[in-house]
Length: 108
Image 1 (cartoon, rainbow, N blue to C red):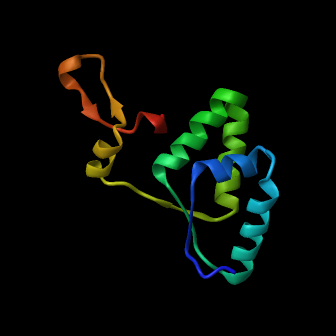
Image 2 (tube, rainbow, N blue to C red):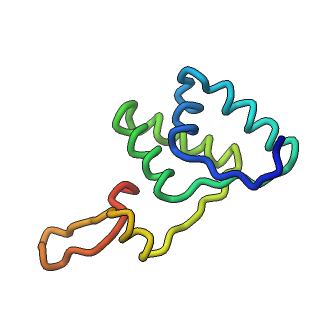
């Protein structure tokens, strides 16, 4: 099946890491991709969502475990341009409103 490359979203990986219903499909796909030697990607915004959601639900230790697993599974992280970040609407506001600038607050 794998022809790749593959880009994973946060939903699939959260399902995988949290062993939610249907996670076996993600496991099988990851195994097939590994056998085929195909590249796996995740974009920085989705990675930020995974980090934020995991920390919020399970705490810092689980967040660190998930980050280690993303590295272990050998995902390549796609960076994003400032232009794309502005389009997605991720905004970080400093303490002074006049110093607002776009920044992915989901990555904090």
